[in-house]
Length: 299
Image 1 (cartoon, rainbow, N blue to C red):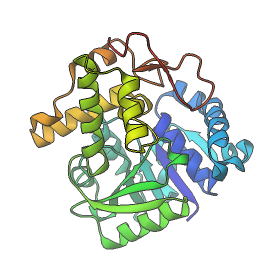
Image 2 (cartoon, rainbow, N blue to C red; image 1 turned 30 degrees about the vertical axis):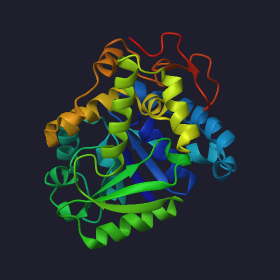
Image 3 (tube, rainbow, N blue to C red; image 1 turned 120 degrees about the vertical axis):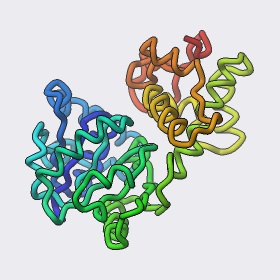
C-alpha cells in the first residue's frame, strides 16, 4: 500500500495527511474549497513546527519531505487508485451523504473507506456504499500526530478482513488501534462529550472557572488536558454538532447541549481555531497551556 486519499482539509484532515506522509505514504488531500486547499502548505508547515516542539517522534520529520508527499486536489476522481480513503468532514450526516454518493462513482473495488467521525453511525454511512463490508470507523484523536490511540469502529457490515487491515494500517502510522462496536459516539466521545458538556454547565451555573475545572482534571485525575481545554482544541462548534448527533440518536436528556456552548459558537468563539473559546489563544505561538479569559468563558 502506498497511496492514501484524505477527504477534508480542515485541521483533522491536515493532521491525518501529515501523519500518513510522515510515515512514508503518498497522500491525496481533497477539499472542494479552493481557498482551503490554497492554505494547505502554509498550515501544514505551521502545524509541523508545533508538533516537532512537542514530540520526539515527529522531531525528525522534514517539512519539505512531508509536504512533497501530499498532493492537494479538489477532485475525488484522483482516489481511483487509493488503497485507503479517510473521510474527515464535518459532523453532519447530510454533508457526509453527499461525499459518499460521489465516492461511489470513483472508488476502485479494492479501496477501503475509513470514516474519521466523532459520533455518526458507521453502519449508516456504510449503507451508502456498494461494498459496505469495506467501510470501517477510524476515529483519530486530536492532535493526530501526537496521540497514540485510534478508535477502530466495526459497523454492522464491516468484514473481519477490513478490521484487520485497519489495524495494520493504523499500526503502520505508529498508532495503537482499539477495536469497538458501532454505537452513537462509540466509546471515546460518548464519555468525553459528557465530561465537556457537564464542565460547560458548571461554568454556566457559576460553580467554577474553566481553569479551576481543568486543573482538577489535570492535577487530580492525571489527565494531560481538562475537559474545557479539550473542547477548545476540538472546536466548540464540533462539540455542539456532536452533542446534537448523540441527543438525536439516543434521545437521552443527558446529552442536552449546554446553552453556554451554543452561545459561544453563535458568538464565533470556537476555541483554538478562532483564537478564543473558554481560553484565549491570541498570543499562543505553539501548543501549550492557554491563558484564561477574564470573563471565565461566558459568552
